[in-house]
Length: 241
Ligand code: HEC
Ligand code: HEC
Picture (cartoon, rainbow, N blue to C red):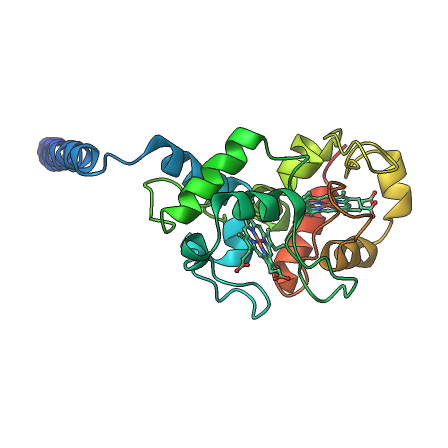
C-alpha cells in the first residue's frame, strides 16, 4: 500500500516537472527567436562589446561605459560623439594620463596587446554609444567556494589573463620593454620576489609605469579592485605552478 502511494506520488511529481520543463523550453525558444529577429546588431559593434568586457574596460569605465567605478575614470558614453575614430584608436593604443601616483589609475597602453582589428571594433562599439549586447557580460563571481575559486574568476574578469597569460604563464610580447615580454605570475622567480601576500597585493594595487607607449605597463588597480578581491586574486596566484 505504502509502495503504491509513493509510486503514484513519484509519478505525479515527475509529471509536474516534465510539464514544467516543456513549457519552459517552449517559452525560452520563443524568447530566443524574438531576440534574434529584434537584434540585428552590427557584428563590429557586437565584437566591440565583447572585447570591452574581455579587456576589462568595463571594470574601470563601468558597465556599458557608464562610469561610477572611480572618480578618476571617466564614463565613455559621450566621448564617442566628441572624438574621431582616429583619436579613440590613439588613446586605446597609447593609453592616457600615465601617472606616477600609484593611487591613481591611468588609461593603460594596449597597443602591444590588442590587435588593430580589435581596437577598431572597440572604437565602433564606443561610437555606437556602448549598447547592451546579449551575453557580453563579465563572468559571474562564484561566492562561498573559497578565495582561490573567486580569484580565478577575477583573474579573467579584470583581464589579468590577457597580459599575464592563462595560469599566469606570462610570455605575452612587450617588445620595447627591458624584459621583452610581460612577466609570468608563476614560477620560482616570481615566488622568490613576491614571497608575501602583502607584496603581491601592493604591486597589483600600485602597478607600474615602466616606460612610455608603446611599452605596456602594469595598470594601477588601486581604487578599482576592492581589498577582498585583491586577497582573492592573491589566493589564486598562490595556487599556480
Ligand atoms: C585600469 C583602469 C582602466 C582600464 C582597464 C581601461 N581604462 Fe580607459 N581610462 C582610464 C582612465 C583613468 C582614463 C582617463 C585618463 C586621463 O584622462 O588622464 C581613461 C580614459 C579612456 C578614454 C578617453 C576618455 C575621454 O573622455 O577622454 C577612452 C576612449 C578609454 N579610456 C577607453 C578604454 C577602453 C576601450 C578600454 C579597454 C580596452 C579601457 N579604456 C580600459 C582607466 C582605464
Ligand atoms: C595591460 C597589461 C597588464 C594587465 C591587464 C595586467 N598586468 Fe600585471 N603587469 C603588467 C606588466 C607589463 C608588468 C611588469 C611591470 C614591471 O616590470 O614593473 C606587470 C606586473 C605584475 C605583477 C608583478 C610581477 C613582476 O614580476 O613584476 C603582478 C603580481 C601583476 N602584474 C598582477 C596582475 C594582476 C593580478 C592583474 C589583473 C588584476 C594584472 N596584473 C593585469 C601588465 C599587465
